[in-house]
Length: 286
Image 1 (cartoon, one colour):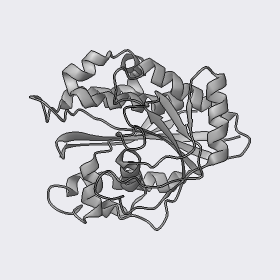
Image 2 (cartoon, helix red, strand yellow):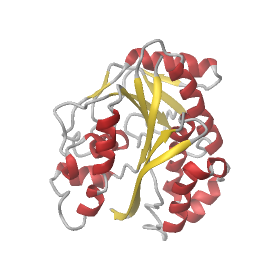
Image 3 (tube, helix red, strand yellow):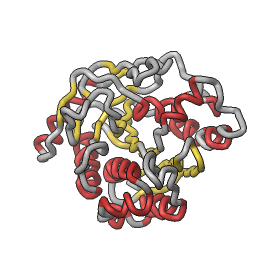
């Protein structure tokens, strides 16, 4: 059977992708951030998963505000980099794992999660930046000729109110764990949660960063995930900015790892663009 061997959560700041693509990763402003991702790259290479289930949000690229699925799953064989207004990123096409994706779709829907099945989807920085940071070459994060792992994208609405609750996201992660365990092929799977951490991109509070709140969130991914499930929307907005609601996607990753986890590595850096950038690597205890 397939099994989940680890989880990774990371911010997906679009300016990070631009810094990689323009060769700026070793400049003074960016180097501390990118140096912090090298241990995660080494961990991922050591674990060497067959598939990454990558939880992300689309930024009005594949989905306009006309149609916004709460939860969607990419079942295609491949996903091209999206043109977000200045051309697609110069990164490889993302290879899907269609058979596993369809299995997950069936299992999750029968588990009463209403998944939207997506047969065609360009993927924006929400998905490609995490891949660059963790699958790219050392602290330059230079793009490989092809991504080393197949990907099942799971898209979550955190753009249009109301997004799914933290508990619903955690429960979806648990259902993903169950679905992976019932898959017939012996595959190693790593689950990514992406987005966050504290940031607000507009208004009088643009640039808001709350290190203390972010640190407590990182701590409780292993220590007290129950508290994180109960955080109301208004707390995210009040304490860490309107866009920090993306952190509910980290709870899908955490739910997929089971009850007990070991923290392998973390990295926190400010500022990345005008946001806080976080990274954590976890492994299930059993």
